Amino acid sequence: MDISETLRHRILNRRAGMSLDAEFYNTSEVHALDLDVIFGRHWIYAACDPELPEPGDCVTVEVGSNSILLLRGEDMEVRGFHNVCRHRGARLIDARSTTIGNIVCRYHGWTYDETGKLLFAEHMGAGFDKSCHGLKPVHVRSVSGLLFICLDEAPPADIEYLAQTLTPYIAPHDLANCKVAHVSELVEEGNWKLAMENNRECYHCDGNHPQLTVPLSEFGFGFSPDELDQRRSKDIRTYLETIESEHARWEALGLPSAEVEELSSRVTGFRTMRLPLMGAGESHTLDTRAASGKLLGAFNESRLGGLSVWTQPNSWHHFMSDHIVTFSALPLAPDKTLVRTVWLVHKDAVEGQDYKLDNLINVWMMTNQQDADLVRLAQLGTQEAAYEPGPYSGYTEPHVEKFCEWYIGRLASTLLEPRAHIAAE
Picture (tube, one colour):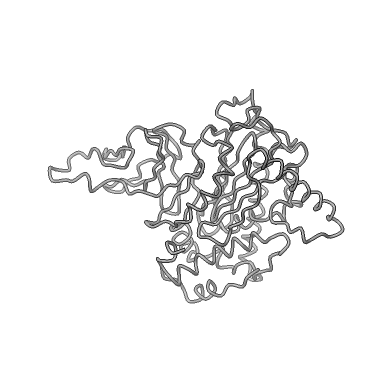
């Protein structure tokens, strides 16, 4: 797409280690560019297997003006389609989630099967060729139950590297045998990049997340051990020693734990690491004990830390011994972002018996709102005439810089090589 020379210059000449220029957070031009280049040509996290547990289950995901339909077929495969009837373009499924047989357009009854093939179209005449009017497909890739979609005809091949690397980390948590316990959809009053930048650091955690910092240490999220000031040096050393001993214990149990950091070096950027939990060390709860009595997979103990998984451009996830929390961020407007959070427990866990819902969700419900409040303030600040890019902390914000490197790198590659760069990398 055509962009202004000013924006082109700022993309190709971004200052490393600094926050982005104000227009990246505020203008319709950048919003349209993001939807085209980032959300239109890259793998984005959309949903997880337990949201579509049975044949006929489907969910819809809104990516800009595109509505995407994910449907589990009788063969248990999840397929993706543009949620648009091939007759006159009516939206096929209007609900966020539902269960269907065939895909039937309510407008004129055109009917499609689970593969998108057009089965029935009344009154179209003898010469009408149904085979030319199937639903338009969308690429879907499951990574141990995390479902990624790509709207581009030629999606980045690096999803295979991501899947190969992350599968040993995620698989022991057995997403296939989980169920959805709760879903939260929160509209943040800020640009999607501000939501992601906020997620990629814990510089702000100690002063803003009193609930989150009960089970989680700020040191696990980009904090550099080089900053051993007198005030925190003992805490940092203790945390590093805990990582060393717990990683050895978890690895001996067959749980990969070491950090893998690929946030800016690949098309499908990601990071993962199993982190110690504070207190009792069992889960993301206020008492740091397991929220559910039904542990996941083949786990027979609760103190297995928290596996953190981040993927560019729009997701982060936490896997514990007893439950999983997945997060996605999708742009709604230059200054609005949908943050969707899903809590998962073992499929046999019974609410009120094996877990209490409030105890399961309250840490992240409070944290999400706290983050939304911060993102709103950041958005307001970028709209001020006094705003100018400021320096990231090399000690506590390296992953924010990695996110911006990835983001600007994708835009720059597209400007320099409009369609060839993705397949080539």
